[in-house]
Amino acid sequence: MTAPTKKRPVETQADLSAEIAEREKLSIEAEAAGQNVRQPLLDYPPYRSSVLRHPTKDPRHADPETIELWSPCFGHSDVDPLEADLTIAGSNEPIGERITVSGRVLDGEGRPVRNQLVEIWQANSAGRYIHKHEQHPAPLDPNFTGVGRCITDDEGRYRFQTIKPGPYPWGNHINAWRPAHIHFSLFGRAFTQRLITQMYFPSDPLFALDPIYQSITSQKARDALVATYDHDLSTPEYSMGYNWDIVLTGPSRTWTEPEEGDL
Image (tube, rainbow, N blue to C red; front, side):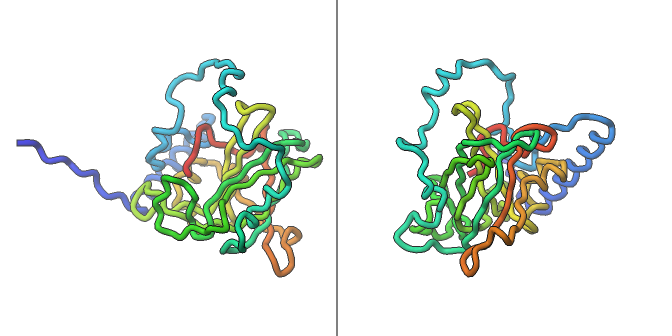
């Protein structure tokens, strides 16, 4: 007779929240003891698939030119200014709250990083991505693709017109929802210099419940991922405005993902 398979216990948000609180306590104790706690924590058990996403072996040197032969291609022409407007991809207006997202890309000394390729991708206002593996039964918006790109100007500034994304379920545990966010990708002089991070919106009630956000145990570092409402960026009777600066190096740098993140 085959032994019955032992089912994994159903994990609720309360289970995950208790685990997050315990990890937070351990990180605080480690920092108090003078230990250097890496941010974000790569192997973060409350983020159940982190064991599949973080590096498990020592880094190895590779030929950059060989890597670039297999790197993605994001277009066959120069970046057009219209690509920074995610609201004009369809024949009609996309559904949702229109927003302007702008900020500066800076180095650790506060100097602007000019001519930097900045790409974004995001869910639509219903919290759904246009992606072949997306199974969330929220509606797709035929007038919103959720992708855009631009080049920073002489002040290191980028600017996107888009729709505020909705939160979405991601299957980490029962009733798991990601806070609303926009993914940012920044390239240096080559594909091998790519950095990826996420921008969040202020006062999101899901922050305390999200293992990905909580894998950064430093509150200062968490706050650096949250945009601020900027009334000067808002357009009268049209869209709200958010400002978010990205710092690439130094002690105040914006934390980036070591590997490809979630959707």
